[in-house]
Image (tube, rainbow, N blue to C red):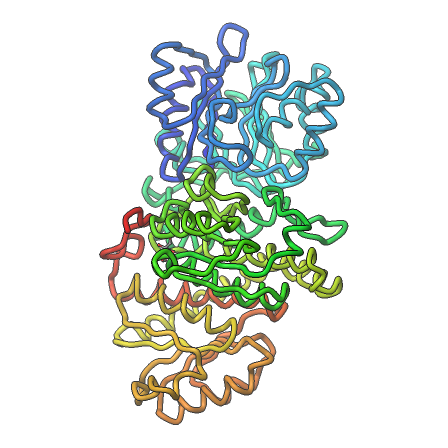
Length: 609
Ligand code: F6R
């Protein structure tokens, strides 16, 4: 996601900021900027595009100073542009702020500030922060920041400079990472450790709800109320490459572990906590359009298509509108029947997949309204769609998609609930129970991640097998498809996913002694049927690993091994059940010595047909 770097000391901050931002480049960004304190003024240089462009600008309009902040932005609120690039200022350019995260209540704050006469320059949520500080400032920066923090909801890591306080930076963190690097007579702040590693290996990690005043010679950490928090720096042992991976061996593992955070970010601002209704700020479907909707198409490729299959199931269940899910490469050529009163949902992490983009254009050509679910603001899919749900997974670097999938699922849940509510097909009690389940799903994903060691052992046991089957029914079948794709793409083990009830129509011929079968058993209404299917494969002496719900003690009696996922709403299980499958694929691939982040023959973004 976005990158933050800050410096205070005796040297020129500019090269440190640029160098630090370059070290965060791997996270992806679409604009960049810096502010330094020069000759009693805060001077900001920023631009849309790459850091190289910022460097060119700095050659033409050089700035220098011993305190400064820098930022690379990955657009969320507001498209990539010069004005939306960070740092952001208040009306009088007395404060300069860089921010990662999302200010959930920014619209409300913006209106409040505008009523008080503040003039906004950008479309970002971030800009409310300098204006809030300006509103509260009476000479005491820390006091003003604390007042601003008390007003801000959502997730943030922020660094603030004030023209009248050239001796300090004020930083704060809530649900978005921020670290402080301790130097000799100079200190650093950053959103991620790699940014400061060439300068120091002594790091303080700020926790949620902590803020700090950083000067060249001191760091004072407090909570948001000002109570001192004693922090001890830790010494980083990792090299730069390992640090980029946050200490994980590979980006894929890091991204699997980022899922709770990605889920929280994607949900931010999309649920009204009072009414427990879904709010989709970039979806503008009129009530009339929703009432007249006759058909929904879902078009995507690969993992995104598998998320779409879950979406089909959900929307049909909650909205009672027929849904067709298509692989984009098929949709574009099959002369689909797309009616006027239809909505086409395009799902794409990158927003640039050639087949998916062609599917989008075909749907539009045929007269359908298009809603995109994508992870990249400003991507072709995001730009060409009529409506947008942005997944806030952050840049996905590993080729195999993990956190993008779970946040695509989340977006589809939100959309299904939104449409079901608007169509009157979803009872209020059901909506509330689903919203409640969604708001705790991040913590449950964390619980699944805690079972990693056991999953690793399974994966190592199965590393030499040539074929693995994934079976399930209903939503479990959709997740089986994703589990099977994940395994084959990174471990090169041949994997097949089957609707468990379909095995007897042919594939059962391949189930012989010792063949591993991953059986997903999370769907209560299909439980007995699924157990019968497991018995069919056990009768052929397959080795069965079941993925069952917590509290299910029966399944264990019919299988060789069982893994449990926490209890949740029956429709939400895919978000939890996919995680062990991701970890299984990862560890199987590692055990086979594969390059998990860059599997053979695959590219991250498939921009050719
Ligand atoms: C698999 C994977 C691919 C992508 C597919 C679509 O792990 O990543 O199957 O899901 O290429 O890509 P996007 O979502 O960028 O359109």
